[in-house]
Length: 109
Image (cartoon, rainbow, N blue to C red; front, side, top):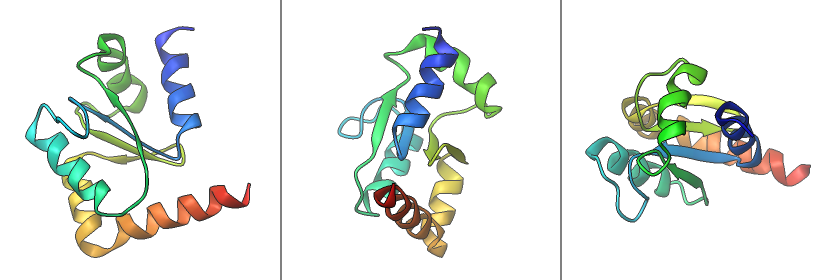
């Protein structure tokens, strides 16, 4: 499986997925830390990929997603964006709704 196939599989297999630097318990950059904190406050489980441990993904994902930076939040296969978008969506209630809708939708499947 090449890197793009691996990325597509990860995005497909996880309702909520964040590509970040470090882990949710030990983020390695401030933007990843803020994004994980916002995501955690929504109360749903989420998957993560540490791009510092996965050099191939760190190099290929920005091209695949057409998004140059990390973190990257994906919900139901859709790129939501990075830290500032995540925080903005949290503040206006969109993040909670998007996550709740995604979880509900996948429970019906």
